[in-house]
Image (cartoon, rainbow, N blue to C red; front, side, top):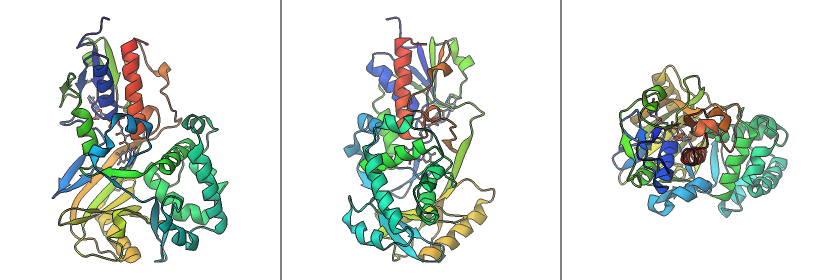
Length: 389
Ligand SMILES: Cc1cc2nc3c(=O)[nH]c(=O)nc-3n(C[C@H](O)[C@H](O)[C@H](O)COP(=O)(O)OP(=O)(O)OC[C@H]3O[C@@H](n4cnc5c(N)ncnc54)[C@H](O)[C@@H]3O)c2cc1C
């Protein structure tokens, strides 16, 4: 085999680039990885406030993701699990709890009682849960495409869609109108139904730390912003893991506030997400607990021109709907390029997009998710290794 240590260049050190490098190392090929910033991880990053990890945007690991199970030692990440449900902090000041009573029986009574969904909605949700959780992922991706909203309207009442699906899945897709493909919706629903949403004790950054610690032979060049033109003379093959300039994105902002006073919900929100249906400011919140400090994390869909005004509106909305008083702002992230807008989502990359020397990789080619970033990195490494251009 002719491949030597400098033959393959990987451009971009996000999840996709790291997985591509790990796969090549496993085959005895040692690539050069060029990353434009000063650390690996791409869109997965955390900072710390005291001992509490603050992720750059609220993200969770879905433990049923097949690639996550394959590449990560989940027990070493000391996962904190969310319970499979949500508090709904209504516009009218009413607070309801809804959840999967099959997996957490404590959700049974609140879910029966909730007014956010009709009896028919609740029955349909159970039927859909059975159906989607049992579907093979290939079947989910092979179905006729339509928007999530269109699909939901054929099954549930407008009230249930507005009260639950829009804030819950809108927060996952980072777009409020649920125009994202039903394939993505059912993929995520399937993963929720077959596993748990969790985050590592050390923040999402610890996913990157765990993976990158396994890179022993890859030459990692940080602070190297490069183009294909610049590297192609130095390498036979290039795996590019970032999107082109014309890629469209969904954005988000996250505000982390100190939580000086305990309230009725501050304990509960440590493992159940709180939703704000029909809100123009905050979409969801949850509480992070450190040794001595509690932090309230508030997520916004989209990015605003005036973050100071947005912060005021969030504080008001949280106080009015939940009674929680947000304390000092400790961190704010505005992420304009959070999730790629993808017109045709797919399970495997379209290889016709590759040319003679460039193999493309990254979640933007498939569907926005850690699972997609991992699988595209693996497939790109296989292509580069097999010389399948
Ligand atoms: C706020 C937010 C919330 C999310 N929530 C979830 C979630 O809950 N669950 C989930 O599964 N997924 C979630 N995601 C998506 C997940 O984080 C991404 O799918 C994944 O990180 C994408 O990895 P990637 O390697 O494809 O791309 P990226 O992480 O974007 O990596 C591309 C890398 O290329 C580098 N780069 C760019 N240009 C150059 C250049 N010219 N030269 C060298 N390097 C370059 C970048 O710096 C970056 O490191 C979320 C993402 C965000 C931002």
